Structures are given as C-alpha cells and as structure tokens.
Length: 69
Image (cartoon, rainbow, N blue to C red; front, side, top):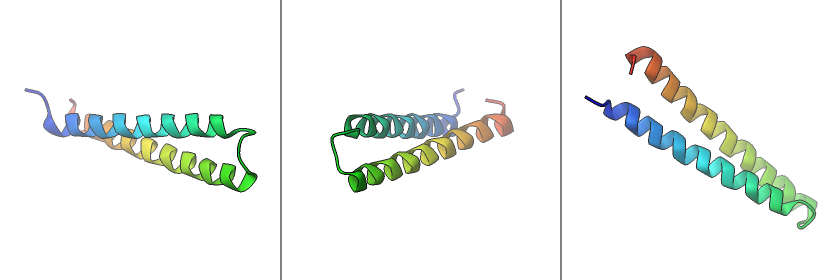
C-alpha cells in the first residue's frame, strides 16, 4: 500500500524544485538585462526558493527515515 503522506511530500518537493529551477532561469535571463537592484531582488527570490526546496527535501527524507517507505 503506497504511503499517502510520502506522496504528498514528494509532490511538495517537486513543486518546490520546479519553483527553484524557474527562479534560477529568471536570474540567468536577468544577467546584464536588468538594473542591479532588480537583479538583487531576483537573487533573493532564488535564495528563498532554494531554502524552500531544501526544507521540502528534508521533510521527505525525514519521513522516509522514520517510516521506512
């Protein structure tokens, strides 16, 4: 029987990784195309998205470690 909680955590992780990837792509496109202040704002968004993806990964790994699923 599949674990519903793991499936939900996996979906949350996938969404967080997608958001992080999109933020990095935005940052890459911004190089040389935006003002420094705007670039710094995008950098902060990338950092926040990275943190969220790391937290989602940690929740998933913790679940797997505690539930052996």
